Length: 238
Image (cartoon, rainbow, N blue to C red):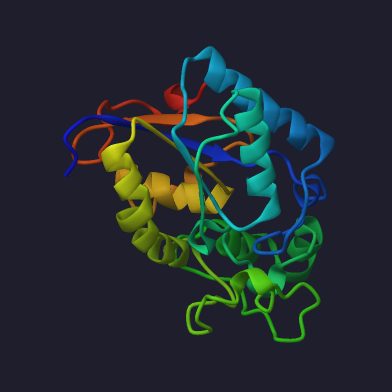
């Protein structure tokens, strides 16, 4: 329990190159597009205009989230704040689908199957084979993560499971002691966190989509629950 209210700002990275190409990205590391850079900068400008001043930023280990955080904080004149990074904030691992163009995947496997892989809470895509050209698991940034924890594919339930130790540890610790915490991460890791915060039922989470570069603001009570019952659409800065 915390002794005061606190603010949590969630920011999905700006458009990435594989967002633009409509590919399954997951854990593969890609950069922002020019539009993504603009979105990230605009997010920082929105924070500044709203008088929201993050005291710490948490990011995944993926470049698109890190770059977004840096651009947003630069625009908000907060680039100097402490930074914490964790693989537990990474995007969902799309397994064997990684790198595939979504329309081509539909042509191969059918609309219903691909929708199940993409939006179902508990159905993961096929595991990524060890010889996959976009296998990220041997990347040096994950050298400290036990092999038993590194995924080969994930559904959203898996993302929530690996996210919760980070929520209950470093994130909650900062929320207990600081006024404003910024998390720059990914569509699915943030969907998982919103599911937890809002207690969204498993069968309704498929409808939630978090746009790129749009700050999502939660004022939390002393129990780290949303202090106000608002539609998610009303929590975005614009």
